[in-house]
Image (cartoon, rainbow, N blue to C red; front, side):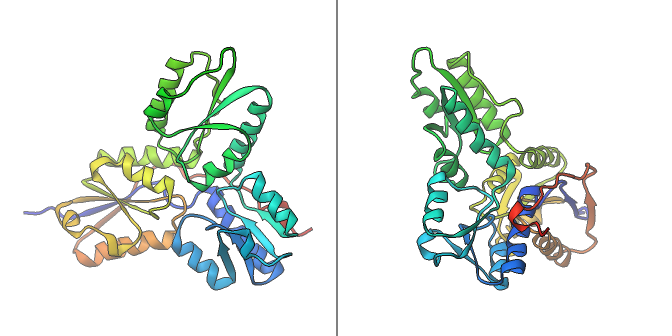
Length: 308
């Protein structure tokens, strides 16, 4: 006889402090300046969030050339390069910076260490907006995998520092750093590391959940680095879905204990929709939330939006 199914809500999940700040930045800018407000790139990597803000009057663009001169323009949570900031200045755009403070810190580190004569290595995903912004701050050697580590040639006597994208797999990054340390014994790392608290917390929670579940649905965008890393952390049990239409119902039927989590840019309503879908499909569903501490990190809004 089949056991009654159980849903375990993985905790923490969903919005992190940086995402919350970015969304509130757009909403506050619309309140103060009115529509339209332009946003360089998706404010966060979630289409539901983007569509919600579009309805309120936000317009999302990939090129500053698509923004009328003098317009209110927000830089997304992923950050931008100095080149983009300079272009915005030339176009007389009124800019508001919604870059996550933890991403901004990696920008600062890249400039600082380069200025101190270090060769700067950056572990990250080529083409990701966060990485592109960081690479614009200083000459950087990008490392995506073990092959890239093997191809690095050290300059005699040069100091070397390794920075990372904030939304990477903790385990995969640790492996790359270990290889780099073997190759460069004097390698310097930032004191606290660059992978953000929310990324680490969510990956640790998924690891715990993988031990007690048969399947884990990670709700998030395919373009979201942290959502992809969560699905990878869950291993063979992990399924990345953007909404209920992508639920693997055959795998769901076979599972008795179902884990549900969400990437750091995924709103709670999308989690609720998946839970309701499963509850409507089966009878006698037990719902349980993992017993973990709540995240308490809060980032203040950009200074430009603080009404004095």
